[in-house]
Length: 236
Image (cartoon, rainbow, N blue to C red; front, top):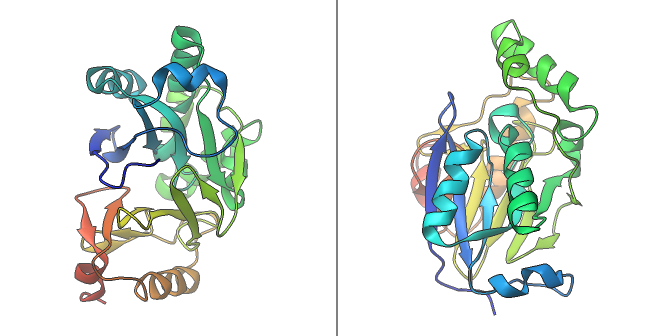
């Protein structure tokens, strides 16, 4: 069964202070669990947005005795995915484990063979050059799961929230009343829409949808402190 009272841990990573969230699981969910995960039952977690500092993330997981069964990406921007190659390699080479990598299909090109140019284009639009991407670049692995609205992965339901990017998504656990919102919604702010694929009207519709949900839902954003839907709705 899935823990209804998970431990949620934040690691702030990278130059852009991205939140990498760890969400503890009692045991894996779903029939597709690989046998290699069996020894780690009770020590599994979902890991959101490893945007940088893979060694820091791995060290925190080691201290917490947690292993990333799922690596879930709220969207494909570089500051949310750049730590993925080293983290995946570490768990494969050290433990023989292959976390399931999930991203919404709208941001699929942010991983895999097309990814370098996608991220260069994004940084060119944001700051006028792609030096940050080029300096840190490691080939990004393709996802194991391309996600769509309503999909279930682990204990989470996928909520498609485009606007910040075409494939921005929230990951919602109804039992725990926890929503990982990425860069769609922050504590006191919302995501930018001036990067490739961003659109203000689309983001506004995604926010309107979120604000129809339970106001008590705790929101764990891509940057900054946690909040609730009710607290943010009062600002808009």
